[in-house]
Image (cartoon, rainbow, N blue to C red; front, side, top):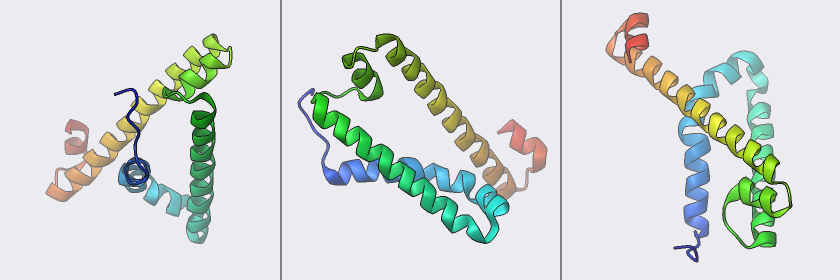
Length: 123
């Protein structure tokens, strides 16, 4: 399994699914509310930042020729303590992201079946 590699289609689907799949439904209203007619620019900047991040990870993966993401890259660069800290920040960030998705889902679901604010909290 260590030698298996994801193809372009699988990688693309995973990235789009992670960002657009839940993210767009969670932030679209907030972005439009805050940015108004410039919402497209906010999403453009976000897309550019996502591409830059992806490019950085691709370059690091090619350089180190080993999977493991940020933890591995920092550890192999001689920064094991920073690697551990970054790993925990990523884990907390992922948990918070999933929490936002769950919160958004509860609002959509409660609104769809007419449960109101109490139903949203219950979900």
